Image (cartoon, rainbow, N blue to C red; front, top):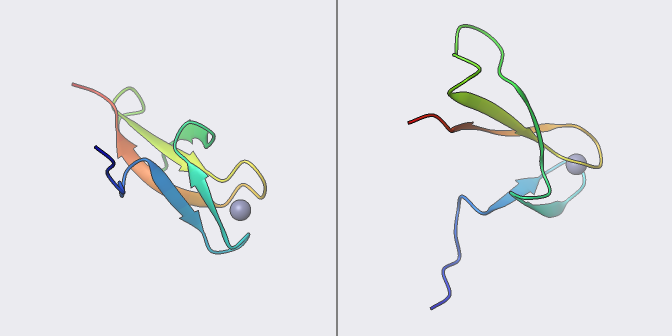
Amino acid sequence: MTERGTDDSLYCSTCDEHVSRDDAIRTRTYGDLDPDRWQTLCCPSCGTRLKTVFIGG
Ligand SMILES: [Zn+2]
């Protein structure tokens, strides 16, 4: 069962590469989002913010 996930693979338009979610750098979100619940995933190569994800239950 292979799923071409939208969540497991992130695309960095700066590097023109796909970054797996495990490889992405996790940083705190900006703004009013609760850092215990939300994290921003960044490209490990260039640091571009790729996605903000909900991690809290
Ligand atoms: Zn990048």
